[in-house]
Amino acid sequence: MYIVRCNDGSLYTWITTELERRVDEHNNSPKAAKYTRVRRPVELVYSVEVADKSEAAKEECRIKKLTRDKKLKLIK
Image 1 (cartoon, helix red, strand yellow):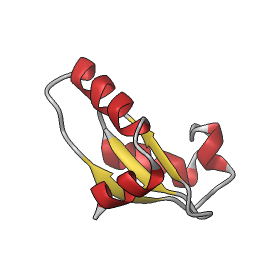
Image 2 (cartoon, rainbow, N blue to C red):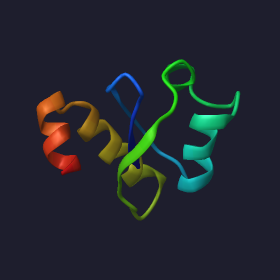
Image 3 (cartoon, rainbow, N blue to C red):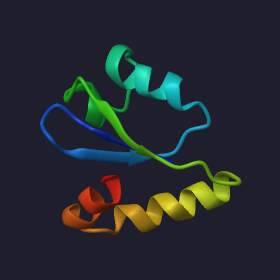
Image 4 (cartoon, rainbow, N blue to C red):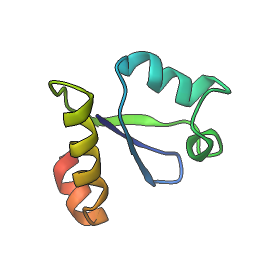
């Protein structure tokens, strides 16, 4: 599970099995998420490794429900 900060200051949260590859895709590939393709470059600001895809999805859901201020506190 990871969070990137986009060029416009917004935060994008998602899950992946290959973090470095995925961040590179966000910055350099047409495979990037539609949201991040128009907000390049992105910077990885937070990541956490979890046991499996189910746990990653739960953590992603939990974080997406946080306010922006709480996400920024988490990142620090």
